[in-house]
Length: 407
Ligand code: SF4
Ligand code: SF4
Image 1 (cartoon, rainbow, N blue to C red):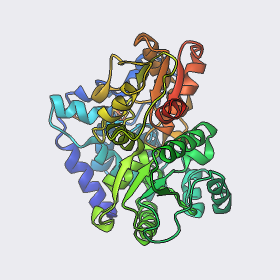
Image 2 (spheres, protein in one colour; image 1 turned 45 degrees about the vertical axis):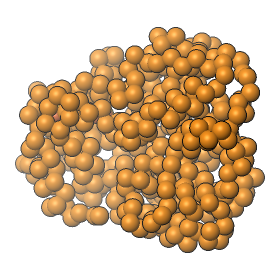
Image 3 (cartoon, rainbow, N blue to C red; image 1 turned 135 degrees about the vertical axis):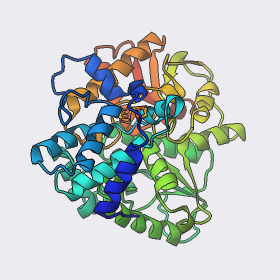
């Protein structure tokens, strides 16, 4: 529910008041980590003279300072914007604060801070304005017209879900598949798997974004509009279950949509459904080449939703696959750098630094394939192995791609 400016400010102050400034939240914060791996170029600092203003605790303190002292100076607000919108929303800081300190809801404060900056005309980052405009005009952040998207959907060869109760399952594909060919291939791979398992499913002819980018970029009003449109479409079709390609869509549907407004509709990420199908004996694998794989836990599947076992179960069920683990794995996994609206951001140099660190950790884990189950991880980590010149040693694949090759 949308809050007014005073409510947002009070909420930020309330949340930040639990912070004891111990800085345990810097443990595992990728923003803080890349400042240790860089020469400082492109790293925004400031807002709080003499304080570490980068990394979780620094951003929280800077936000508190601006709200508490009602700072309106544009330069300071722009500095705050640069650090606040750099957060990947990976959630590692909240985990550390929960484990070692006072359990501050850091991301709630950050999202409210982003909303305040957007309402004040300071946020989001310059490059993030276009995706917001596109979401408003077309219902997706990539500037595709609804007719382009409709044509793309029809070419997938999956049945179109057009009337109430026509199918049990709705496969919700999400926007990135239309914009990136490899993610598009992942959507095709999931369709192949669903067909093979004889799942009664359809896709939407007029699919729009789940609204996650609007939330991350601080435009709650736009998010609520998109949410209502999707709810009306879902309720008019009444699928028993929605399967998402992206962890970001999954998280948005289960944690941000009012659950009472979609009664009887279960939502799953595709990796959860695959694990169930394997357990029921509905997906059989043929033998494949031997591969040593390491699994990247996407933040919005793992840390935000505790889905760690199902993708691993799928991997462990495939003959020839040997699953290794990152040193930092599951809850302690390092983000790919693409969450929190950063896929549309001005932080490309930093983004590659986070993903580059992770790609090198894949080699350290002894893997020759890095598997993930998220469009943003796929794009960022695939770029990373190229940028650190390890693409001959470490391939990046989507879980669905691997499964589709072996059924
Ligand atoms: S760990 Fe929690 S209490 Fe400590 S500085 Fe970070 S937010 Fe504050
Ligand atoms: S959510 Fe992740 S990137 Fe953002 S401040 Fe917390 S640990 Fe750092």
